[in-house]
Length: 153
Image: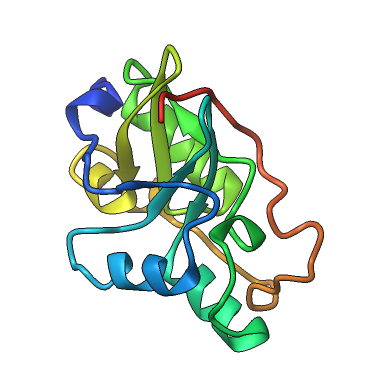
């Protein structure tokens, strides 16, 4: 494995939104091909991640007039810019996610996706197997994942 820090492969294409951002606004931003997810920040920290599948689940279960804080994935699994890509890949696989927020000293710096890690780690190391049920907004354990770091919003 090549010892490359995630800062070398991180992308700034996941825009920040507030917890009050509506489902319609989130869906509109996620329609752009270069946007893999939305990073939800309050005034002091990264508090969640919203993906296309989160928006689909929110609309399917509860309609469109909801703030993202009601269905975002939280707590957020993060990595520091100096984290080696192999450790980032392991963290993603272990948490069953495909995107990590990169955070350093309270500042959100970008995201690392499985796609951005592909040239550096084996396909097996990036494999995320999901044997569970589809995302449900009513599942209190749906967002149980390690992480959560400060950021500047």
